[in-house]
Length: 278
Length: 313
Ligand SMILES: Cc1ncc(C[n+]2csc(CCOP(=O)(O)OP(=O)(O)O)c2C)c(N)n1
Ligand SMILES: [Mg+2]
Picture 1: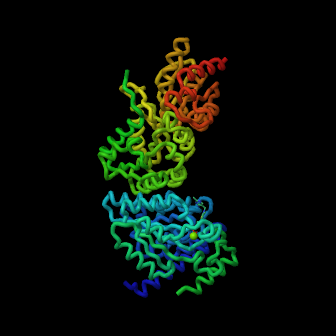
Picture 2 (picture 1 turned 180 degrees about the vertical axis):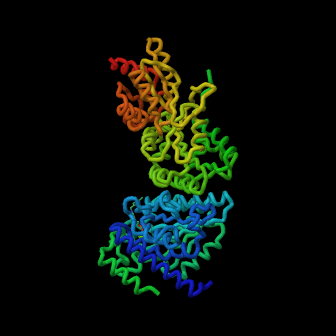
Picture 3 (picture 1 turned 30 degrees about the vertical axis):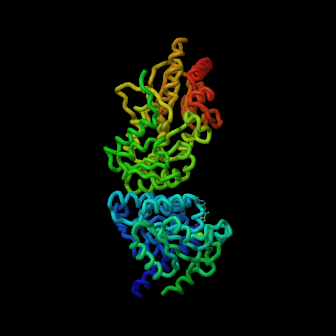
């Protein structure tokens, strides 16, 4: 199925806006994680602007779809999406990481409406997603649970405990993304501690697996649409991504995992993003 | 003689009963359902029971997800694996979010017996007590266990229920009502008070009988809730008896003894002795042999009471 050119253009523009927010937020905060936020921007855009059945007016609606950002350090990408969907005013984004802010360094479900699960300690999101998917089935609700994992994150043993359980319980109401940007803090995942071959591992754990370009909006949409039709299995979409995507000097640099742009770099990054806007 | 019932058995029964009354209750286990007695629930409510296999971190994380979607999730395994192996999951997925996860951990303490030190949680109360939002129950008998399970289901937020493997006799009469955070004076006395928890309440009652023959009347307090701590009852005991002993099947560091010492020092310092595991790991043996070896006996409690009474001067 081809998605209309117009829809793709709207989504690409939204992703660009999210990337700008990420840069502004982190530039202002002076600490945080740009690389993994930027690599996930297109996936998060597709979910929040196309797939998630959510209502910002009623963020706790029991029938809503859920999204868990298991790699919680990418909080800015989630906060920007929530703000743009109307959960709170976009100005509040600039309070990120400040004392008293609802925008904690890592997502906090108790503080910020729209956050379905607090994360930050890596490796825990998929377990929580499983619990939500099991509850949805018990209650005969048709909501879906989406979760986004980092590739370095899959070095955590709990991820594989959970992966086993999703398949064991045939959680076909669960769709996961792997942000396969091939970098973690200390360098390339294959040098630090290789979890590869990742797609094969998820397949071996009993999941339906698709591998896509995680920055090609059309591929993201098609992959999710296909995942929605899968019966009896949880679905993993391995998204091949570039850490720091969209800001030339941040791309593929492990150093930009957890350092933030100074004012000059912020302006340069924003100028690049604006120039690439459709 | 009255029949002994292990608190884990009492838990199994209470849970199956709770399942009938409350359809929001779900139960998870990690391949120990026959030992933790969650199998009682699983038999009646197979759809609401989830075996997670030998994967305690995922056990706690999944319970958090179920709770976030509106369930009251009871998660069970041995105490050493619940509080220890999955501590970060309890901290970050459960307690941080104040989710309705009730961790019912069995086989706590040295009365695990022959399995040895690797399986004998002596630090779980300390770990769980240190977490914000967490309520900690250590029931002493069947009635306290049933009360703790009921109270856990009623209250909003995470709860840790510490349960044992060994049988314990009933310590409460007919009219007993379990109240969260409210210690129970199970024997009156003015010369000293023993504040005990779990299986040590029964042992303390035995010691009181011996001491009474010597003319020492001890108050025995069952501290079934470690958190929130009943500071009022503790301070009254300190004020009215002037000498305290704590008794627990747990390290003297950070558990009941630690909690009581903190409350007493801040409010009304009196001579105090902490009986428990003295900063060492357990080992294999019969439960009764281990209790003797680690000094968790009526004789040891009586000795400690004599000592603190003497220190009153
Ligand atoms: C349990 C845990 N250990 C360590 C960290 C610190 N940490 C934050 S991000 C990160 C690397 C994550 O790499 P990856 O999952 O590949 O994230 P991405 O590249 O998408 O940013 C680490 C080790 C953490 N947050 N949680
Ligand atoms: Mg990575």
